[in-house]
Amino acid sequence: MRTFLTIWIGQTASILGSKMSSFALTIWVWEITEQTTALALFGFFSQIPRILIAPFAGIIVDRYNRKLLMIAGDTIAGLSTIAILFLYLTHNLQIWHLYVAGSITGTFEQIQELAYSATISIMVPEKQYSRASSIGFLANYGSNIMAPALAGSLYYLISLAGILTIDLITFILAVTTVLFVHIPQPKITETAQQSRPNILHEISFGFRYIAKRPSLLALLLSASLFWFAHDIGAALYSPMILARTGNDARVLGTVASAAGIGGVIGALIITGWGGPKRRINGFLLGMVGAGASKIVFGLGQTLFIWIPAQFCSSVNFPLLGSSYDAIWLAKVKPAVQGRVFATRSMLMMLMSALGYLIAGPLADYVFEPAMKPQGSLAPIFGGIFGTGDGAGVALLYVISSICLLLVGLSGYAFRRLRDVETLVADRDEDF
Image (cartoon, rainbow, N blue to C red):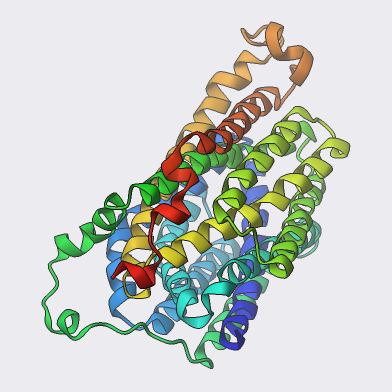
């Protein structure tokens, strides 16, 4: 676990810097536009290149040095931050610049993340898969505690430029930690080394692998539906809070920090416990818990509701995510994980991008007008959500959260999904 933890420390610092920048850029864009669509397009433009590169990324990760690929991902992200900082300091930064930067960064981050996830199974023993995955969630949610609070306060002291500079420092730390550790490579068979790869055959490998295992396909489809609904809500999250609080960045930072605390506690629980014996239970029950908590969050209009609801929601994601990851790591051979995980990522990102794409227009042009005092939905839902700014966004957020709950509950109705751990052979038995 030593190599894994060393890399984890550097990536944790990088995630912290990135989330501080993301938070600061969210405030900057909202101050300029006050449009949900403008913010939702961030997620859309970062996901589209990920989808396009994913099939090729899987081939790259399975055939080339994963350590160098991880370094390249951090380096490109750092250069992108430098470009944004330069444009901001010269008073030339525009919103479309951020979309372009997100597209470029997303492309290389997809390769980096695949390289990292496909390396876990050969760095740690199988019994530690859930624990290793939960440690990853610990980094993500730990940064959620600090990044919003720090960025929300520093934004008014050192401006966007200062926060971007902090982000650059964390990128340097991430690259340094990877440079000085040994990252193992999976063994490639002699036949595979000597053969000339057929690109179409290689790209389709992940699809064929998953299609031959209906239970893995059911697992993937369930996760994709969940993240589609989730990312509709994710696109609405910041605009809803900012609209309800008169653009108060500190309130948004406080709520985001509550999410971080919940995630850290959830990750610590999984790290100590190791996760449920039947990992599918952790996956489905995590969905149910997240959906129920987010419904309460969307119904709330004050910090007294938002903070505990966000905390409870975030507790579930380490359970959900670590259980999901552990199933895939146990069922897919390390030498092909790059291509299989690329296919998995591509479908999930496609659904995620679709969620981001439709969330903004639905909020700005359908639900917000419909929840104004004279709107068509105000007589029905006005008593619950009010009719002020953000009411329509909140209604759409609750609808997406109900979908999360339903996806989790419906998983138990399908045997192929419910019994995935027994219906699919472990990777050692699979070849």
